[in-house]
Amino acid sequence: MILLFKDFLSLTFCGENLEAYVNISKLTRGVTSLMANVAPLLSQTNLNMATQTKLVSVLKSLMFRAYLIYYSHFDTDSPSQLNIPYEMRIRISRAVSVARCVLDDSCSEQTSEIVNSVMSSPESLGSLNSDSLSVDKEETQKTPLIAELIALLGKLSRISKEFMEAEEALLRLLETDSFPNFIHSTLYQRFLHQIHTRC
Image (cartoon, rainbow, N blue to C red; front, side, top):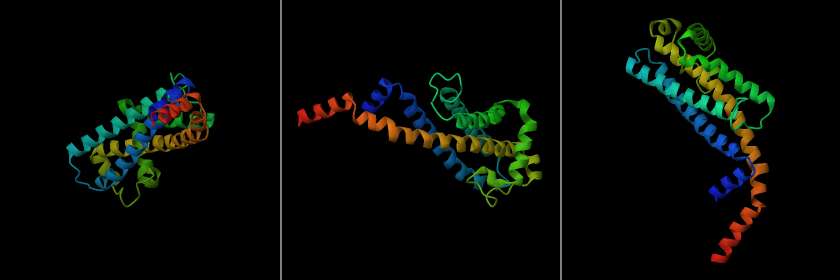
């Protein structure tokens, strides 16, 4: 039945809604899980370099996935642009543009601003709290990867927060519009008829 629903969405030019919802859900669940697991590690001042490097790599991978979702569904030139409120699109666009320099070494000044902002108000990382984020500024200066980790977490947290709003909006749209239309569609009625004739 899921495949049938996907076919219906494609026929009604709404396939991107389900695709975006699934992709965003995977990303936001991944970010939430990662935040919960990374917070205790950041409180260790003796976090070894291999672990730091792996964490930075995982965070950059999630950030790359966030960019793919943005450029596939939210950018004004997206091939599958979603029909979402203008204000939501602007907030998502701002969150992505702040994070855009993650893979670019020319943004070190912006990265230190984010680190300092996170250090002064750790609650900005959402699920991370001040107890679990107890790396002091001196320590981040000694270990640049810790600073990069904190900056990446801050940027990813902001993107994820905006994506969660879009995810909720898409779910409401699917529940209140697409699915009821699907239930009353000829496609679904034919499907029901085929099931009844087999029984």
